[in-house]
Length: 230
Image 1 (cartoon, rainbow, N blue to C red):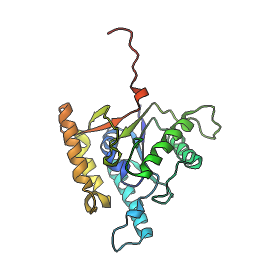
Image 2 (image 1 turned 60 degrees about the horizontal axis):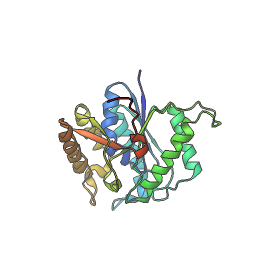
Image 3 (image 1 turned 90 degrees about the vertical axis):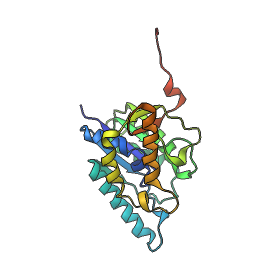
Image 4 (image 1 turned 135 degrees about the horizontal axis):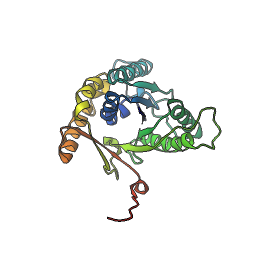
């Protein structure tokens, strides 16, 4: 049965870079994949652009990325740099999880160099609660969320530890073609995004004996496994 995988990023580019290889693989296997950008990342406007124009461009880039991997894109209207963990933001995201009937949610790790990333983690954590709670009054039924895990992001390194490892070799070429739709992948002057995430996939892949892999973390409580015998 097809699943719906929903990946949440603080800015356009976050989910596409950190979760995109796994999303592409799921899409190739017939699952529905959705990226939700809580902001469009427009405050990283390059020289010669207006903030408004760059915002619209990022929204269009996110849509093209999603189309290339066979997914869907949602970009919310919160201004970049002004993302805060409010109940309004949590419920808005929870409503999307219910609307798309999300089976799995991918999102930011709890610690980050970037305030928007930390806010995005808390927003998504609480949105998962509201989206899956059957007794929470809402016109849509609860989302059937069974898995949620945190992506490996270079800005979210503090205390991050890979727990889930996915072989994404078959999806890597599709992701590499699609990610070039995003301006920051190859044009950022502050960080070589495409080079970094391609290299990271090679390093992670080497650890599990494949060409490309992507990793996700989880909370300590989610690592508990009940065993009866060895």
